[in-house]
Image: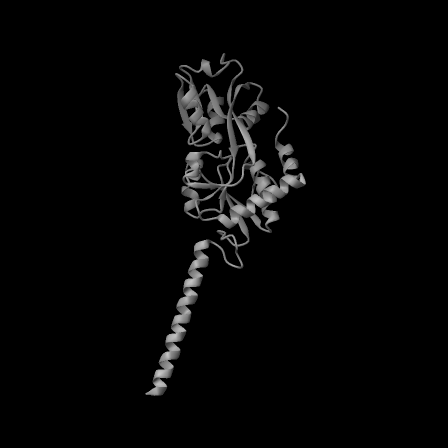
Length: 269
């Protein structure tokens, strides 16, 4: 009888120990990190990035980093990943679900990098890194269109990317224009070339790429909207990774490596 009670006590102690271990494990999982994976990554050892591609010069196909993609955002994150001793992986996703926080909340990727402007509205559903790029909005038209400014868009079809600050600016300022929404620049650029729209209102660096590519198009105006881009993280869930990315970004700025990457894609124009 006494022997049975001793074994019962041992069994109860073991059960309690396992329960406590289970609770400890649950706490680690909730914080998103473990000793082997302190950042709680989708795939341990790999920084998985979601981006809406193409959006040159920030994201487009090509490069030699092993992801199949390149561009300012991608090259900058490749340098950040190396600072964190991680590999880089890139997934092409839709911008609307990315900027709303849905893609991040689904656990598809560790962070979003898609020339995404930091806004108070987006901060409700997303955590942002420190700013890494300051941008303007711009208006791209055919050189023979007769459009010289945003005031000439009354009755015109103006292409915008859905869910972007460019769309917001056009909604507020392109009076009388018919806004035509597209999922990405990959549809906007062919649309203006096909004559389906009369203008594109979007980020200046992207329109500048089109101006460089085809002399039949030009930027007629830029708009200082006080915008800065940030890398996006699932709300309240990636503090360790966010802090590490901010730290690596600062190191790249201090070392001059950020400027080298910047100069690869942007000119004085």
